[in-house]
Length: 130
Image (cartoon, rainbow, N blue to C red):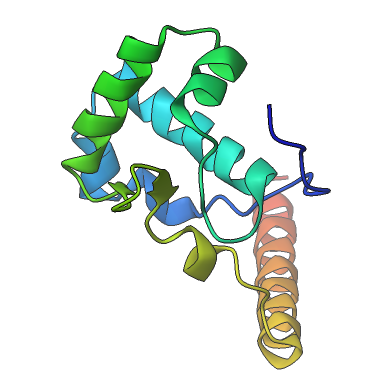
């Protein structure tokens, strides 16, 4: 088994709830995709997945079951197989790239404004209902 990198989290985007690629998957494969995202994150920053035997071991599934699932998921474009036979999560690197400081600060300020705006609405509604 390959040595694990020091990655302990990854981004999971809200868009996944509205992504037709994910939405069309049966629940079992939807779960498998999330597990593959986690394995890719654990394996590094490029989205590369461990070899099929390691995936099977980590997920407590058979090698044929993992091969079948990877092939079905590949039909959606969520994972791809490289010419050498290894697998990777297609947009993992792009989706998990660091956010620039200016964007992170802007997003934080937007969330804070939204939170303050909602607090004011809630308070005025409570006063009206009292």
